[in-house]
Length: 251
Image 1 (cartoon, rainbow, N blue to C red):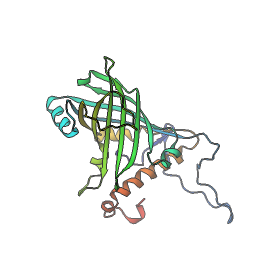
Image 2: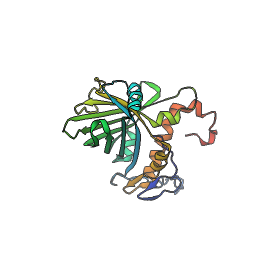
Image 3: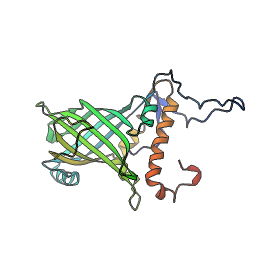
Image 4: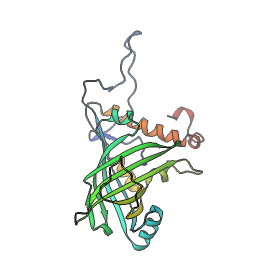
C-alpha cells in the first residue's frame, strides 16, 4: 500500500526503531529475540487505515477505460478502510497474507456512502511470475435500495523500466460485480462498472500515522510486518533497487 517502515505507531504511541536480538545468555543457550511470542501468548494484531480516491464509470469492464470515462464525467469513487491482521505471526507466515477490511466506500453513481459489510485484503500474493505480486481487495457492499455489490480490486506490483515502486503500490484497479462474490470464487465475471483509485501523497503520509497494534508484542509485530513488506518489495524490485541501495541496507 505504498508503506514505509519508519514513523509507525504501536498501541497508540510512537514505536522505537526496530527490535534487535537479545544477547546470548550463555554459550549453551541463546536468549529469544526481544518481544518474541511464546506459544501461550495471545496473538498480537496490527491495523492501519488507508484512503484511496479516483474515478469510476458504470457499464464498463476495463478499469483504465472506466477511470478515463469517469473522470470526464466527474464520477468519483473513494474509500476509507481499516485493514487488520488479527494475528501478525500467522499473517506473515501464511502465503496469502490475509487480513480483514472494514470501512466505507463513497461513490456518487452508486448513491453515496456504502458501508463495507465484510471485506478481505491480501498483501503481496505471488502472481504467476516469481517477481510479480498482487495486493488484493474484496469488499461486500449494498446500495441504498438493498442491492448487493462486490468491489474487487488489485494493485499490480512488478518491476518495469523506470521508477515504478510508488505507482505500483499506490494504484488500485477496481471492478464492481453484481452480488456478493467471495474470495475463493471467480472474480473475473463481467463487471457492472470499473475504474482506478490511487493513494495521494498527503493521504499516504497520514496513513503512516495510523499503524496500531494490540497484544503483548507490539514491537515484534511491527518488525515482522516491516520485514515482510520490505522483503517482498526487494523480491520484486531488487535489481532496480540494488543500483541505488547500499548493500548493508538491503533486506
